[in-house]
Image (cartoon, rainbow, N blue to C red):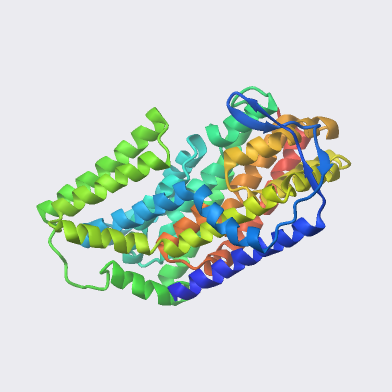
Length: 463
């Protein structure tokens, strides 16, 4: 099943690479001039000019995934380290016993169980809304999946709690420096202005996502066979030894490992908030955690190394998918058609009514997000054009930032070209096609909500 998932998704992404390469032979080339401002490479809004296109042939297509691997090396290495470290921790048996204890606690106190999803998702949402929690959810996926399975849910619920919780907060960003800070700075509006309306957006985004996950969790709790992951989760339960009815004792070694894990999470949060840690530092932290837990768990160094390699090996398929996803952007940039797409979007929006212009900005940002999988990168690409364009069509620049926020935040969790999304699904062993079908209803709902909120922003002259 896993090989089929990797193969099918990889073929789909590589087909997009080929399609984009074909477009470089059809679409004329063009580019905006760039300038470096405050250390950021920004597009100059009125500088677009058509140039000779650079069609991408077979050689460029074959090289693009390799270059994509190089460009995405940071997230790929992060996945290798996280997958390896957690395999080591899992091999000690500490995760299984800890989850068993938590599941027993919730089972004995069922009134607490109903608060697990809303409280946990709200915490992750606050992280996504304030400091841009995104890649940082990866370690938590491997904690919440066995817990969800032990409580009678499925791996989708276990994945959704940290990942979609943070994604809901990301879409409803209030103080997120990577989304709001950069976009407002480029748009030359007061930093973190318009906070009151964005708090309302955050509440709607978080509440809607929690309601959807809780509805689904209750449905699976009642009838587990309705889960699209029902057959796959049988193997997942076996992997986490959740089908073992024997209660293992919670030894002192397991307690120390659990303490180390909690301390690592504390260090993670402190490092992000105090020292702006990113993927390298977080990967190093969990690499150290894996080694320490292996030693405390009485694994030999050979066992630690073997389990680490096994966990990293599980990430190879996802690494190839991420490489091909990044190859799409490389082909567009080398073929000189990325800026042409942006220029075409701006021309369409310039003739629209303000309400439709704001909504088209949102849709356009979602489309661009398919190719540019970085919130800050997308802001630096699009906002120098969208901000002055908002002035021309009668929108406030704050509304243009909101449209960017929606296009980046609410679209990413379903994109097969997003390294974080595919990394999360890889860790969770969830095929993308199953995830897509499961998420489609809430994506449609949030799409409609975004259109309504943007219309409201226009009518209230959102500042």
